[in-house]
Length: 161
View 1 (cartoon, rainbow, N blue to C red):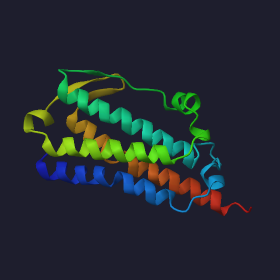
View 2 (cartoon, rainbow, N blue to C red):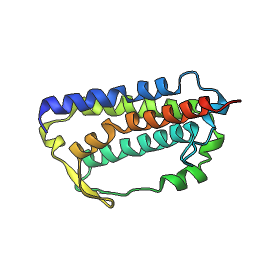
View 3 (cartoon, rainbow, N blue to C red):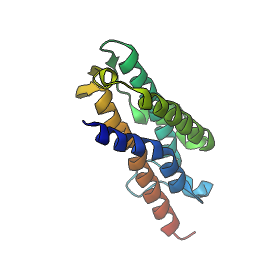
View 4 (cartoon, rainbow, N blue to C red):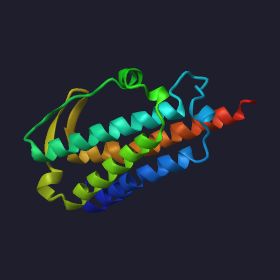
């Protein structure tokens, strides 16, 4: 990955919080809690998933940079959703967590050296994992879930009250 690609991905990463906020714009509690017809997560649940994933990902990056060959473990998002009461919590704290994780992590990304970008670890769910792969995954994470939120809200708004 060259410097230009990195900068484009970092910019996409920086935009993630705003994309999620835009997707949630104007949503009522009833719309946030409307279960999509496919049985997927509600907009509220998706927002909490993003927050937990962003907090987890920020630690993953820090470990990749600070530790030698760290072992990164995946987690069960559905289990988190159930046990951490995603469906019953306001989204404001989740948005605060997303913003904080993204802001602090972007500051780190801006300071990485070529040696830092080359750092790697292992991931129990991926064949290869390192700082560049981390950026490729998380630059788009908020965007992907913002689209999921927007679709859930569009569907909720199409259902007659």
